[in-house]
Structures are given as structure tokens and as C-alpha cells.
Image 1 (tube, each protein chain N blue to C red):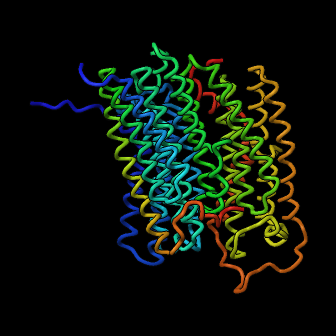
Image 2 (tube, chains in turn brown, green):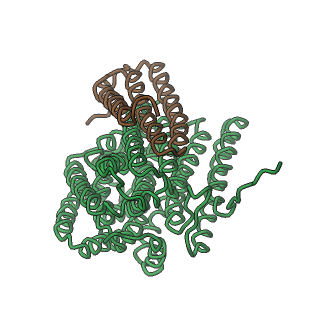
Length: 102
Length: 490
């Protein structure tokens, strides 16, 4: 089998996951935060597909396909919320969403 | 050419069909109907679908002598799943009653019923999960339904804000869970729980243990166990109160039942590790929940912290890792779910009466103005402490026995100490209920019309909470049979 090893894919997916997690924790715009969430889910997908190849098992690929659908759904809901909030002229900054803190 | 049709277990899938049919009917009715007819139809459809699912789950719980797999063994049909589905569906029924007069939902109530059914269906699938794919899909199905349900009153900024916060934190938890699932799959090469357990750690124990840790973190987000609870107070406060009541009761029940099944089946070899991890999470939740609740004024936030502390109590029997712990978890969940929905129902009723968020002071005089609500709320608060006559008294006793059997006296002592702490804030609510009203708190425009639905929900929760105390023998029989199929490590 030519090409990078499974370990290389795993390292890449770990880096993607860490980037996504950092994005969720640090960035303030909800749009970027949603993007970072997608990155985390897709890091999981990459790991699943790499392992599916290593074990020569199709289960991991099926899992990855299902995750793609879920990820899309989650973003649709997130974007819908952001649209609803911008219509109400709520400031779009996750640090400014403090009406609930008390 | 002939195509082999797979055998489909129609009977085993019947609860799902009832709920899915209900979702379609509720959505269609909210397309074609307008005005009050839409709300009435939505409620009728939701109630019918939930009652149908309840009947199906009860029937399955009666006939399922041994468990079996469904749909290529990806779903489990056994008494554990059946009992968990009964709890979740009952929580859904009570929540549907609370929606009937939710003032902010307006025309959107028809959609709210469809989303509620969808969340219940997702949880019903989640508790029956037998492999990592269904675990993730079930989790996301009910979570996404709940995100939208939180925003079902978009006129309230708080509700949108709570929903976005829940989505971001919940999505983070799910992504961590997914990555953990990928690592476990990588270490074992299997997706089914039992096969992961048989495969063992393989050549790479580090991969398996890291995956297990990430899966536990993902589930801890859903159970709102500390330190993964930070979304709980904000979301519970911001979401419409009927949704909060449902989330508090059903999400916890579903996630804990899944954790029990998944940990005992897939990770028997790592039992020493996950039991101690859960014990640490339990202690953290008890500390954060009880100490946080002491300083709250808003009743929904107080109940949110109380739910974090009960996540600690519920994790204790799972952490014990023995059969007694499994039974204790299921026994504890039933009165706990009733107490949660019931107390949020009283809050919802009071909220509509006052026309604003309910603080502890807002409960002043409730016991004199509305004796039934006051008495019910008092029972719920005493029940949360773990006093008779509610089933939580026996649930706590049972959970402590499981820890004793495991030999973890230290955890029992921590649990007892924090129970004592919790007396302070629960009794604070009771004191407010029976305080003489200082001034008339009624809003301009008088009291809202009498809401029979919410009264029914409160009384039903009360009956379940107290009934689990007096009906202890049959219930212990039920929970013993439910966990009989699981093999416990200790």
C-alpha cells in the first residue's frame, strides 16, 4: 500500500481537531465558531476513514457518511439561529451574549 | 434475480413508528391548520403518538424475556431499553401538557409538538443503541431537536441566546464524543459494543483509553456533570420552561442508561478506570451543583444547579459498577424524572401567573394562594433532598448501598454531606412558599385563565414521585429484570 501511513492521518486529524477546539474556545463570532465545530466533526471523520482502511472494514466509512449528514443538520440549525438573532439585531458576538449571566 | 429482504422486527420497532408517525402528522397539521385548531390538533397528535409509544414500550417490556438485536444488531431490544423508553416517553407526555398554554409559543406550538416528539424519538433510539454509529446518531437526533425547541419562542432574546449557547456547547461535546468513538474504533476495529468488549485493547491500549476518556467527556456534557456543566444554568434559565422540564428529566435519563449499557458491554476490561473516573465526576458535580445552588435567586437557575448535583448522585451507582448499582440507577431515575418535570411545571404555572421570571421571592405565598401547587412543590423539594414520601428516598438509599457493596464508603460520606448542604436551598424554597405574602404580587390584567393541563401534569408528577415510594416492590422487580442481561464488572 502506497501513500501515507495511518499514523500520519491520525496525526493530521488530531491537529484538525485541536484547531477546531481552539476555534470554538477562542473565536467570538458565532459563524467562525460553527465553522470550528465542523472542523472538529470532520477531524473525527478523517480518523474514522483512516481506521476503516487500516482494518479493511467498511463500518468506519458508513459512520463517516452518517456524520456528514449530522454535521450539515447542525450547521443548518446554527445558521438559522444566527439569522433569527441578526433579525432581532442581537449583537453577534458570543462574548456579548450575557443577558443570561447572573 | 431475487433480492433477499431482511427480516424486520416490526413489533420491536413499534415505539419508533408511533413517534415517527406522530412527527409527520404534527408537522402536516401545522401546515394545514390555523389558529386554535392548530394547537389543539398538535396536542392531540402528540398525546396520541406518545401514548401509542408508551403502550408499545410497556408491551415490549412485558414480553421481552431475553434481549435481541434489531436492524443488523445495531439496535437492542431488551428490557433496559424498554424501561428507559417508558421513562423518556412519560417525560415527553408531561412536557406536552405544559406546552398547551405556553404563552410565548403562539402559533408555533404545532411545530413545538413535532419537535418534542422528535426529541423523544431520538432518545428512544439513543437508549437502544448497540453500536457507536447509533450512539452518535441518537445523541445528535435528540440534541438537535432540543436546540430548536429551546428557540421555539423566538420573540424572547433569551431563548435564542440559550439555544445558540446550547448548540455550541452541545456540538462541542458531540464532536469530542465522535473523536473518541473514532479512536475506539481504531483500537478495536469494531463498532458494536459487545465486539469492542471482546476485542479488548488489542495492540494499542493508549488509543482505546484515550477514546474511552473522550466518549465519557461527551456523555458528561449531556448529563451535565461537572466540570462539563457550564451550559446548564444558562440554557435551563433561557429555554421555555416546558422544554427545560423535559430536558432536565429525559436527557439525563437517556444519557445515563446509555452510559451504563455502553460502559459495561464495551469496556469490561477497563472497568477499574471508568468507575474511578465516574466517581471523580460525581464528586465534582455534587460540589459544584450544591454549592452553586446555594447562591441562586432565580428558581430555574436553582433547579439547574440542583440538576447538576443530581447528575452527581446518578453517576454514583454507575460508578459502583455492580448489579446493585445498575438497579439503583434505574430506580433513582423514575422518581427523579417525575420530580424534575413536576417542579418545572409549578415554575411554569407561577411564571404565567406573574408574567415574569420566577425568583425564590416570587414563590412567596404560593402555598396560600394555590394550595395544590404549593403542596406539590413542597413535596418535590423534600423529594429532591431525598426525604420520604417520594421514591428518591429509596433511590438514594439504594445508590448508597451499591457504593457500600463496592467498598467506597468515602463516596457515600461525600454524598451524605452534600445532601445535608442541599437541605439549605430546597428548604429555602419551601419557606418562601409558606411565607405570608407581603404584598399582592398579581400582575395587571388579573390571573391567566385556569390551566387544567398544567394541573394534570403537576398532579401526575406528584402521583409518580410518591407512587414510587409506596410501590417499591413491583418497581424493584422491574428494574432488576431490566439490568439482568448486563454483565457488571464488580
